[in-house]
Length: 156
DNA sequence: GCCAACGTTGGC
DNA sequence: GCCAACGTTGGC
Image (cartoon, rainbow, N blue to C red; front, side, top):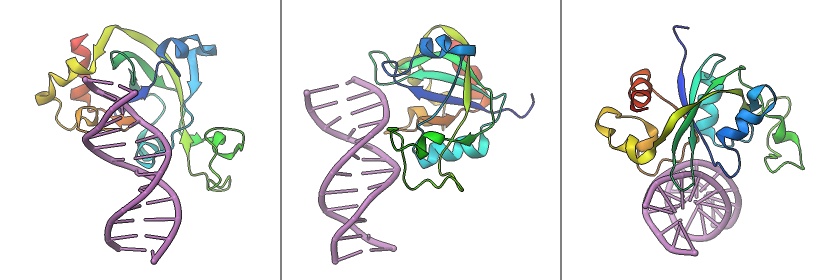
């Protein structure tokens, strides 16, 4: 897999944790509800089957990377946008031309320990351009350079 | 719980 | 097309 991409995806553990993903049938789940255009564009244009992603816990006691998952589908329409009863319903998403997409993610493993945001920030000089450590960052799906991926994993 | 940062909406 | 108001994210 020579031209695969690496990612970081955020999830609030109170809503959906790495353990929740692990507990899913087949250890996989569709990653619905992305309603941010920048995150959508990354997913739609650059995320492909076989890519790997850090699973990051946000809005919790110690935010950080807790595991690794794999993209196991190509991007496809997020059907929750068409469901009026869904909290992700978007009347502006036309089923003939879907506005939002999702992918399927499969649990790979947990990291040996939590790699905290605080610790990642300590290596900021070697992680230039990583959106996670940019001020005010709110991206829930972001690309991670291979070099950055390797560096962060080496902290494990 | 606070609040800074950011994205989106909508009036003009 | 500008920009104020608003809602959300997410670290602290």
